[in-house]
Image 1 (cartoon, one colour):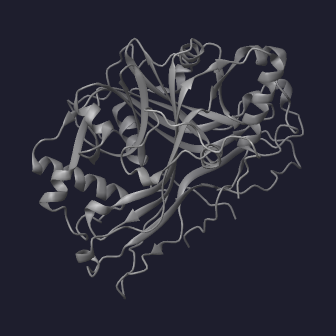
Image 2: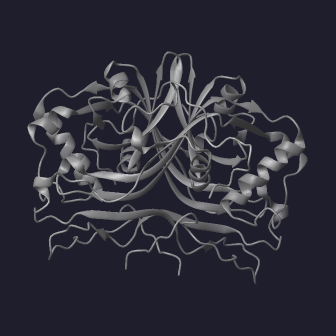
Length: 230
Length: 230
């Protein structure tokens, strides 16, 4: 089942940049797969080059359609560089489990990652910026945008939003148990997977919270079943 | 209390690359802080440039002393580039919580990140490589190295290990509650922090596991107290 409407693209185009050479069986250029991973990750890592020096900066992101938004202060060096139209590599990574094999060599992690290449555009109009900021807030906590004070003109002006087109993107995913060598299978070593997820803890109310306010229920992780270890 | 022995460095040197311009109060060049964050993170993101194109690749890492090891197949494009001595930016990011403010503008996340700049060296000797592989295995699951089959000569040969020196490194950390504007404090909106942590789930034994084997106890997250939401 695909969420892509008829007539739209199902896969991102393959280029030299987003070709996966190592373990290509783990790669997918499928649009729905790329979107699901981007949506499940809270932060991305933005790579860009200034004076031949690579920088990798973590930041919140929000995907809407075939664009990924990032935002920050109008004083940010990162956003300044990106707004200048440099090449960007955006990567998100979700760690889904420790893969514990019978041999040291076959230890691994289960993960889902996406890498996207391109140049970002600066959102200019206030309406477009507001829609992007709504997406950021809703991603942190669904339903939140309609509960909080919206950005005022000064806050909107102090915030830059950039959009990276999803065009040359690729997902890479490892799932499942360890793959041990046949001759190691009888070793007296526990083997299997310890699931990992970014999980939510008990909320800590602000010390100055007005009385009678509670946090609506939310669930972490939001994107998959996960049973905490007892 | 510092873990740094007398006479050793306490802070990494400050350069143009690892200077934090945005919110410098959140930055630390302290060696112990940088080490603790690197050790708490399972994966890093490696940034490097090939033909002017930035790449950001997620990979496992292990810190030993003032070096961070990364490893992979001898066929890996990433390791090939790094072994060539290109400039690397290594970043790790831990997400510690959603910061839910009364205004959309002051929403944030609590996080701990480290960024390190430099050029990697290829580990040449088998003893040095084995010590690094031990560090990787022990990081995934403490005590595991002495339980599993160690790498054989063919596996050792198929694995490249690179060491990035910790020299120009910097940590950036946000902790604590939302910082709302004074005029928003009385708004009828829940505000506070939802703690997040990469938490361990119920282990899934390999289908072909020999009978009578159990996974020793382990705890996630390993680096801080965290109460799962009930």
